[in-house]
Length: 228
Image (cartoon, rainbow, N blue to C red):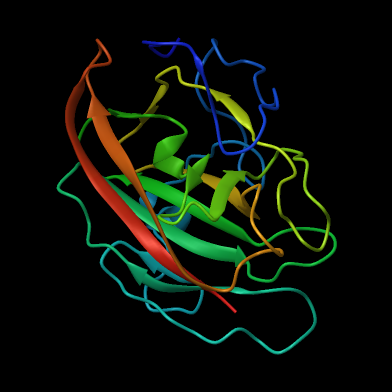
């Protein structure tokens, strides 16, 4: 059972929509690999993303690229990735679905790889994977890839705000293993048009926590994307 420190509600813009509350007071992330929940992989295989490739970026490796020609809405390119934080986990991000289409919004995948010699517990369990994190301007938000949200297909602007609990979730990563999750890109309610083109910066706080769920060390980490 993962530690929980507080419970209340917050919302990401617009009227409150009670969504994704199932399991909000239970165990933290876990599950199978793929496009679902959390996954763990050894560092020596897919645990670290390849640097200097279009659409992927490990911390400290600035990346850029050009969206392939084709149909679909705005495409996502990683344009900068922050240096690795001084923590026993190494964050990374990659683009796994670069174009918005009528069927789905763009998708990223975030990853945390343990560099410690013993298990580490990190939090907050959703924010470290950029779930429900907005960009610096508040125009875009990243949402868990396994959810259904009130947005117009082929536009991907939310009609309503998404409510989340503010309990403090944590999860454990074994030495040399990784936790990864897909996050989808949506425009926040109240803006004009659909996914806004241009450069957008996302940042979050990654904390290593003790058994009492009190932060031992934390750092900010983030990346910038280009929608074009």
